[in-house]
Length: 387
Image 1 (cartoon, rainbow, N blue to C red):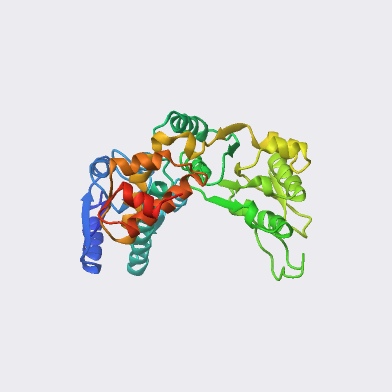
Image 2 (image 1 turned 120 degrees about the horizontal axis):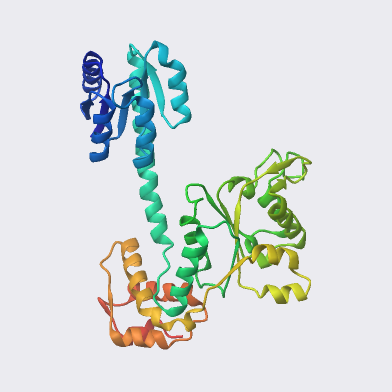
């Protein structure tokens, strides 16, 4: 059921629009308001999927209503209804965020196409919000230990700034979770977070991956291709395992950070980019600098804020919470009821040496859920999770 509000001071036009929409689709629930003030009140109190709004009205005109609604419910598409002399104003409303405008008297096909397109857009906005919540939950930082609470506090303080962040810590500790939280809590959250695993890309391809290339730049460059910096424009670029990046690529990343421009491989034209860079590594970059494998000037550009993610052995108090989190998540993925861990089983898990950190813990929890009975006991730990 799609709820549509028509705000129009001419009763005859309201009736025509209501009749057209009601006959077009039985799932359209159409409400009416005779002026902008009443329309704004209805929008404030109800959830509409679309608003059709006249421009010239008493009490509150269409432009004022558009600006007011965008402040309280920016996701609602608003289609302006313009009289013959209102066309310039109608075009102006597009700059203020209106979805579209239709002229009086409305052309039937144009009206119905505009309504369908606007409702489709609203549906996409809703679906994107749902997906974003799902993604956000997938990257939740689980734990209440002192070390984890410190990281959460740091994320809340730093996310709203434009400061670059270097995340350090052993493999499997969840550095990517911190990067996602920094992005999701930032002003760039509505733009992409692009991830690049520098360790997984051959050194001869990393520059093309980051900066793109033009056709003919090298043998396999059969067409122009944008790189990750361009893809992340206005959003965030997460450079994971940056300690494995080649010195040549490091020099180009440094230039991108200094000048906010990149150049595709094989090209001589600069491209402006607006990107926040977050980097992560499991290496001691200061030692890498001493050995000549990492640029000191790039380190200082990246490490404006340093966040160290501890290994699981340093946060054993979080293991019960993590076990519960993974148990529910894995059970949902497998389509089975969550299994319980006995107190003795959890205590034994807390005593293990977790060299593989959280990644290793998740794998063992999954193995136990698959191989054990309804309750996972100390015996199951010895049988299936022995280290």
